[in-house]
Image (cartoon, rainbow, N blue to C red):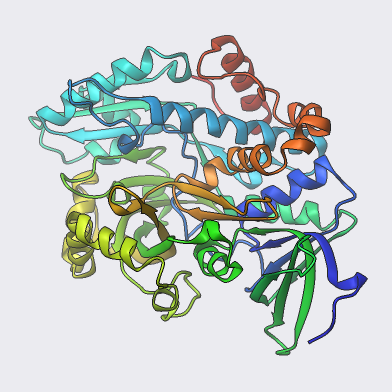
Length: 499
């Protein structure tokens, strides 16, 4: 192993070359250009795990159509608080991307984002009644201005003809639609960000390198990282003042290796995704929407079915799913031993508690694993009655690792969001979890900067952050004029529609 020297030291090491790490690296370079940043990626290129376009479902989450973000309260009203949070977080992403396009850091919005309406679609009297209540609550808020509701078969057929053709005219259905939605290719966006970073001084990325261990430096002012070159087998040691673990499912393994007290009690539960996809132009060109349904009673949030328009490498596709699978890998290109090797004395009880308290999830996953081809097409046929099975193919998506964390009340809880875990001195930060993930990457990074680099933020960074994100410091949830101004501006730059 080489000994540390000036060539083997950095201000910040970012582990992983997906949307999270590249977003953070661009932020840091904009805020403090002289920082020396090294990025370590195990695979041959960026965005080859969860950020890849075929590996993620996070293609423009703005909480317009995802029904699991708007639960029914016990009193029968609809709670839109979570949806509002995600909605305005996506606005921050839109502003940051617009800043980079104006600056010339990203050449064209067409390379990664396209306008696609967002719809919710339900079948049955009870669900239609829920959707109507949901629409009333959301459309009354300025963040959802322009959201439409209909139970008319003809109207819904104009919005999304494939989901209505061949449907029983007497079937009770309902839909909402908002035209300001988007489809985002986070793989292409990651490549755009990486290409910009490669033009920056004091930035380097090392592909086909893996962090095998990390430990605090004896002086306490940062970390040593042992990094293996996958091509040569050689290992070198890098010193860093700060470390960011944005390596998808592998982040939890590295977090455990760090030995920080804040990592205790965390575990991961891997879930793989499976899609049906169709690239036939005569079909894909007739569906211009992301249409989200409602999960079956007792099913977890990850099971929400949707029929999505996707634009990947300049071609329109339809994706339907997700169907869940199970693998003990924490990454699509990971090891079957990932889950077993992540078990520690401090997370055994949380793991057992989650197993005890989440029977519905376990039952759902078992059912999904044993689904037949006919079962999968039956689920799609509820959305698209006239489908021809020969037009569709099966595709395996990336791995998602749901977080299990220690809970004093329940011993352990299963989390479905994104979690930032950092050491007491903020010298090491790990990003864990999944959805809405990529769509809120900008908010996540700003939130992390606020929590982990507070002194720098207060002292120097606020004006620059406001240049990148004009709404920073304001409250989009309460300021209707600010929302209108920001969305009009970003829609013009990104080529999106306004409601």
